[in-house]
Amino acid sequence: MRSIEQPGPVHPERVQYAPAIIRAIDVELPPGVSLLEGLADAVHSQGVSSAVFSLQGGSFEPLAYYMPDLSGTPEHVAYFSERFDAPGEARIDSGSITFGVRQGQPWLHCHAIWVDPDGRRRSGHLMPEASRVSSAVRLKAWMLDGAGFDVQADAETNFSLMQVSAAAEPLQDANAYVVRLRPNQDLCLALEALCTNLGIRRARIRGGVGSLIGAVFEDGRVIEPFVTEVFIQSGAIDLNSDGAPQACVDIGLVAHTGEIAEGRLKRGENPVLITFELVIDPLE
Image 1 (cartoon, rainbow, N blue to C red):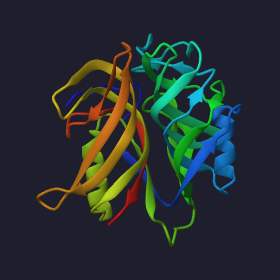
Image 2: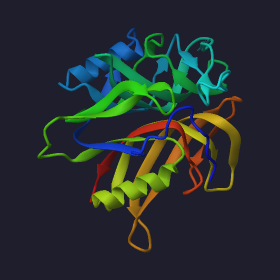
Image 3: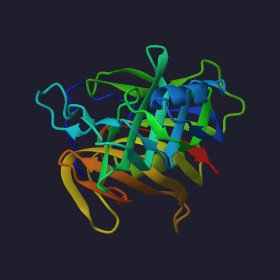
């Protein structure tokens, strides 16, 4: 399996996770608000500070974004581009969002695919303060209580990243797990191992934002460029023929070359590049 040596020391804990209480709701952002302020209002109205979202339509104008990029220095294994702006109203196709806090203030991490006015599909990392809703944006939301996401410095990758934060006291009625995966471990296999350890037989994956070292799809397609930005379109844990948890993860991605791809990941062939954030919502 592919791997990339990170600039900092390898952290001994490869999977961060914490129990949480999850609540599913529908959210619609009205025209005129930025992505950040609209979602901050939605999250805080529920009395929490963290959530994950799945984008399901609407449009932005302006839509400002970064692309994944090669790093120009040894301080990082990958980086991000200068700012790009969609040439007019951009219609959302799909995307995922991790919402949490950064230095005590609302912040989010969003990767998405959209369609420009000329019909061209594009993908990247949306800039939350500079992207503004032009027609109502619909989202599926999963509010998190008792655990969530907090941007903190990460010595291994030398980035500030969304990391798992947990309540000081044990939760008595937790029904989900907030998860963050560190680099160089296969996304599917890491989730399967975590579910096995937690005694989860079946689950849905909610949200899901991160990066992979290229990608290998179940249908044989391979994305060779190693710097990508990825989001989970749908994901599930189910039992295989041996009765063990098996992950099925469908993603969208963009590589630093601009190549966009979608499909189901091949298990055992898709290591994390920098980080991956998501929520496991157990069914059994």
